[in-house]
Image 1 (cartoon, helix red, strand yellow):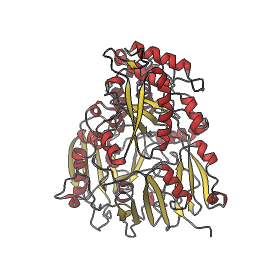
Image 2 (cartoon, helix red, strand yellow):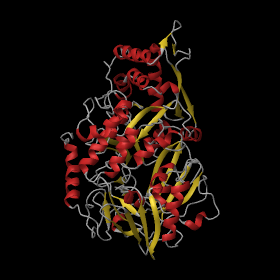
Image 3 (cartoon, one colour):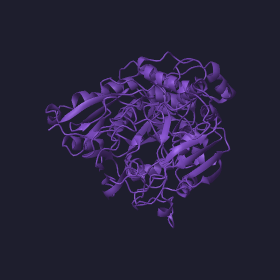
Image 4 (spheres, helix red, strand yellow):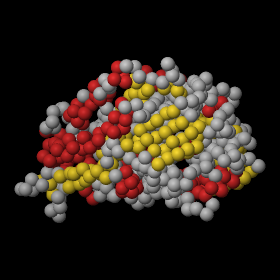
Length: 607
């Protein structure tokens, strides 16, 4: 059952109504495509609704990143790629409008064609599409990119490639992909694949990290960089796509630069000193108390809260269920009970932020915590009922503590669950299993993740009454990426943002292939036929009713699986930025997310 939407969802409901009202089979090439029905904008649209089409060009935007980088290839598992390569320098066949749940409009491709069942998709390239070196983007580049990404690229590209039965050039500028699987999302997925210059990679191993400068077809080119320190991109004055309606009002800065800092605290100090242009504050209490420095009081720095209507996503401490100590859901529930969210939230956020209720919380795509599955949700999950953790079908909600530090009631429940799962506290006060092995584990964090370090320190103390010993291990960025790619951790910080159009990417998040296949986003090691069935139902859904029911089923199975100890979320982004930066008055449906900063911002001095 779908709950009555809160007020912030009226806008989304109106958009979906418009999309569905235009639902018609695509019988000929179109300017755009939507997951359901037709895209909201007509073929003759002049700009996206969430931009300022008259935004001036010029200025510099500098952003602070934490960690480091050692590669300019963001499409493979190896290495840590510099921020901005994919977004700024490489173009896709279609572009996404973040003012709609899931609609694409032509970029490199001037049109898209598919049938009602979406058994194939055909793209026709724009004749003017060019790489930054002036060479044309060809069908050969498209076909090579699709196959290369799908065979030796990162794990997130592999699933869609396996669903392609054939790929053929159908005209001088046209390419057709025929599918072997029922999946309505596939045309959109291929539309968002990065298109690379085939000739640049001849004689090179694409699967390796590289420091070669990329040749792309996007609005910027990599101008200068220092490995692990900064990457600076300059706007290409000869960019072929600068006059497209889709791009009008976007990509306004002459230079976009990413500077790397060891910690979040160091990046914040750099912002206060005027060395970076904007800072996204994740701590609600700090937002109220730490922004009284001179630049704010003098009006040189502006504070803004940007609302959004996207799902909460999931963030917290993830269990690696490949580890025997975390294989039992009862153990995971016990450790969730021991996590005193209310106390931690008060200590770190002043109690200002709500807890993430589920993976798709804060949206109509989220299940209702604590209520049983019914209707189509139940139909999807029922075949797997015998193997599902308790609460998946019956109803599950995260435990709530009394707010005091002791958390006695939940600790008692946790101890009982641990004993039921075979873990007993010995005379020495240490929790052990039948083999006399102590319950100990490591929380792996990247150096500089101060927020999660503070959370972990409080959590470790809370585990001691249960006889559990946990330690925090902080490692550098490169080591962290290697260890998480190979799932070499017990517990670590986990964050996955969710959109209003979840689909095939969910299989890379929690598909069973990720249990052993390195480099997927299935860090927790989920191996659940019910979850895979829910994802399959999502991508095959013929309408929004089926789609929402399947997403609810997925949300139930993930949340009741107890794979993550969730922390908090916010229904708004807190941004501080230099006063010379401006953004459109109308924020997009997704708020401060991909497609907003720096895409639609511009520089305009008030002096």
